[in-house]
Length: 158
Image (tube, rainbow, N blue to C red; front, side, top):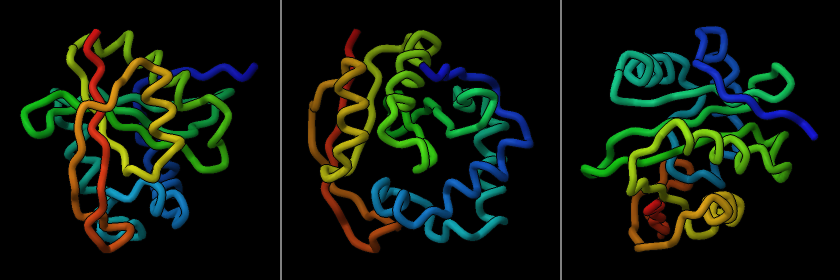
């Protein structure tokens, strides 16, 4: 089995994250993405804020020393949230589930929340496998789809 390892984000990871972010299919699935995923300057500003904010817990997700995504926890709507992105080439292999399980041992704050577009079945399954339950619904503007869409709110209580 492939070994998923979380590690601190390195500056060399950012161009890899940028390439992942430019994937149109992944953007459609994630829905809540940057306005222009091909804008390097906007990407750098966004990641500079993340990397310099000590309240954000952030890790690169690696598989056999290859960066395949990232995972983070941050404050949103006065609640602690978790978010992750896996390169589409690695979808369906259990990597996101394994990474989230490992991350949950680093981030012990509970309750912990997550959000997923209602039609993002893969992300919903990852969250549910890791003990998150659907605790609400919301609507929000999804840049990748250029429309308001429905999403589930998930909560991990323990």
